[in-house]
Image (cartoon, rainbow, N blue to C red; front, side, top):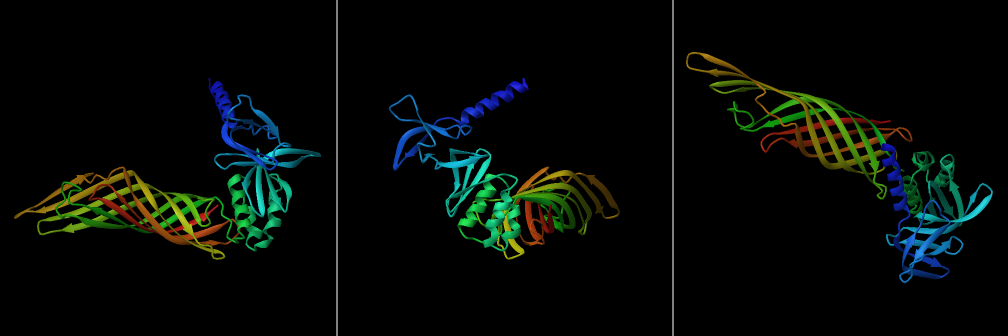
Length: 362
């Protein structure tokens, strides 16, 4: 049954890949619009064009057309490519245009510079990028960060065409260690035995975690990162009044997820950054104790309440931070940042963390 479903999915995807879409063709100096295009990427040497008044398509091979395209601006141009010792003319998808133009055919990429088309395989594409990186000193090493995929190669071509000598971004991931201060705000109704109104409890926090960062490929300085940390926090406070003394203890073990866009500026080996975004916290463990001594006229009454302070399992809020990365090699860096986050359990109960974080990518 599973095999049948897998085969069905493959067939559906294959049909979608060659489905008809509104588009145009260019034959000689004339463009023909108002038709439908049917192109099979597995047969890149021909395209079918359906006109409005004909049911049967006209089949054009790559020798007959200079280009065709779709309504969504996707374009294919006819180019001669070499396969072993054989030269064939096929349609290549245009990914980036300019002084350095990037094309794609199936899983293969091509660069064109000064009307010279060069095919790039996964084994030798870095050699080509090394030659193109001479114009920018920092690219001499950083070009090795470019991956053999559409987004990464397109971004390299875009930077090259803009003559922009910025750092080449790449996907990164690694570990986090944080040390900071946490504040738990408890309102008047946080627990039934509260006779002291709203108050705040502070504690020191150590956290560990992982992060994953992905560039916004169409932006020069934006990236998008996910950060997951685990922390254990113990809040203790002693409260006094003329009639009641309370010792309050709250223990939390939580997972915090941050998902945020990050803006950065490249300054040689240093990369200052700032971010702002939503955050969520899940309490894996929540425990509380309230030890109370009530002073009567002639005696003292002692009481103990377990788990009377109810902290919700899931809390949501916002976070922001600033910091800087230090790149000590082409693909490795460490970063220091100050992060401030606030999550809310109820209107009166919330948790704030101010953390100094150290990150190191792998």
